[in-house]
Each structure stands twice: as C-alpha cells, then as structure tokens.
Amino acid sequence: MLNQQTTRRDTLKTTAAIAVSGLSSQNLVAFADGDDKRAAGAYRKYPNAKKYRDYRKMFDDLGTQLDVVIISTPDHMYFHPAYAAWQSDFSLFTRAIA
Image (cartoon, rainbow, N blue to C red; front, top):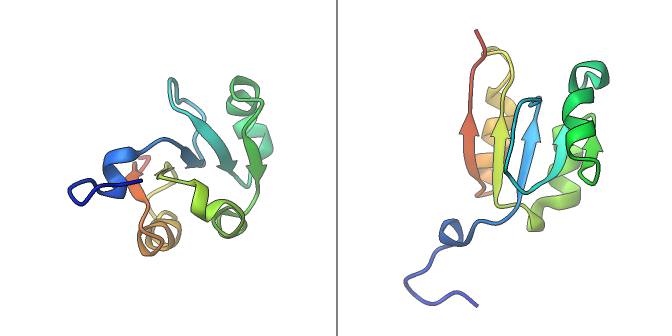
C-alpha cells in the first residue's frame, strides 16, 4: 500500500514497450509491434513478454499491471500511443528514431 508521500511513479515495476527491439535490464511484460520480423530479436530476448500488434489492445489488457511505457517509433507515429499512455497515467519514455 502506498503511503501519503509515495506516488505510483515511485513504485515502478513493470514495463511495456512499443516498437522496441534493443532494450536490456527492464522487467518487460509486453510488446506492441506491428512488424514481427523487426521485433523478432526482442521477442527472443524476452520470451515471456506478451506480444501484441496493437498498443490499444495491450493497454486494454494490461492497463492496471503497467507502470512504464517505452515508445520507440518513427517520429511521425509516436503521438497517439504516447497520448494514450499519458492519459492512462503511465510513466512514459519516448524516443523518436531519425
């Protein structure tokens, strides 16, 4: 249980990733990537993580279990998943790929 001075962001434990293949050391519980071929390396590295093709479905299924969302998509594609994550009160890390 959180005390009055502890926020949800102070107790982060689980992470979901969107279009990310080069992560390490995170407790990744789910991926959302529309390109299975590109995500294959991350899928092999984290075989227990749930795999989604649509981030909206991932947020619906795992919303209460997620603390952090990492988004690594081309810069013209990250707004909608970032906004959805922000509205769900997840901590958010975005990285626009050039």
